[in-house]
Image (spheres, rainbow, N blue to C red):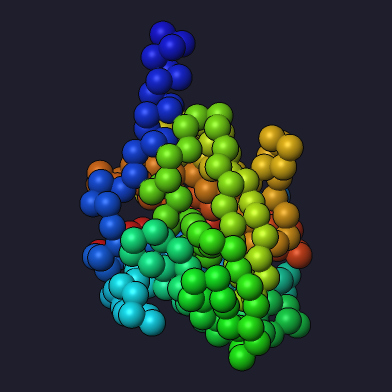
Length: 237
């Protein structure tokens, strides 16, 4: 029985979205909570938009939005909008448009990446091969094979800053969703094989199967004000 459970964990985690691409429009809506005291702070969404052509490359287009409510504004005000375009062939990031408004920090950046050169707000920088956007990873991580208890490293770039992160498959846990109670598996950033969330855009994601596709149902994000939790509210297609 134990061997069967381990096999199930491994094989399920290696199954990507059945449709295999992001050509169809889709919108995932979330409620945002302060993780420690289960206090609702606002709403967020991830959208799969119409594919585009950027610098001659066929790309998928994703949009992430988050805004706090009146209560959330008093604790940690957020008005963020992020658009990301990734190469259809390898899912590498091609462009990032970010409007960040968190507390007293406001920043707008436009980043374009071609081969190993990036330009952010007119400033050039060098990037590694196979670089990914941290927010698009939430939607595309299911396209990579990360078996149970194994890790995979990713080079990510965010508004001109590059670094390497390591993601580990922590295995199954049971979570409640608007579509019933589900068994989901969690992918988490780790350091020295230990689970960790840093204030550098790291996110811990739990995926569940809904309508024959793996969906990010719970997302933990570390901000300066603490850890927030995004809980799936509904899916619009």
